[in-house]
Length: 287
Image 1 (cartoon, rainbow, N blue to C red):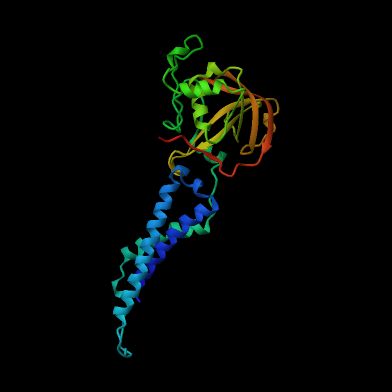
Image 2 (image 1 turned 120 degrees about the vertical axis):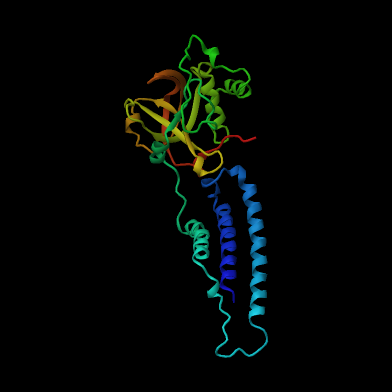
């Protein structure tokens, strides 16, 4: 039997089984944007087909290597002489993600990773989160007296009107990024507006005891491009909430000066500790 054919078959089966496992366990969203789940199913179908083809190759190679004759003691059908260091390294490289995918549980990104990546707090007039996941883009000339500088009539107009009509703006996972960007572009339109959102707690050096950030990781394509978006929140007793805890808050939007930036923040009136959601990430609406 050709050992290399067996290894190739195992690799194809391993990748197909790993994709199937991620779909069955619901862990696919911890690696890629769930918008691409259909593409992953197509990949699963192709890998399964290639696995079947490779099985037939094993059978054919076995028939060629063992024809109907008596094989004496000196008969050797081994393919070990065909191996090379490059070939072994290539197989190990392909096997490593399969083994790690089955052995190591997926790790959810948390506040420690947010500290490394940096948090994009929704600053007044900042660019949309999907385009700039790790930076703050703020026009220093922005002021309350000249809001038209950064108010683009054709940007988020539909979501702005829809949000202003809601008695309470509830940040669900589907609309989270759109709502955050809309408030970022039009902060003064939302002053006094009641909002409700859930996220994990993150703190930066220099924050007051009553301040923290309610944050979520945003995944545009895959976990490698994950960024963090969040809103500054303030209430008495915020210092008692541990970092990385998940909280659900309710309050009103205000605008404040934070460092060199003006940004919307949530003046919290109600809050509670909650369990992390099944899918802790949010995703931009891709066209």
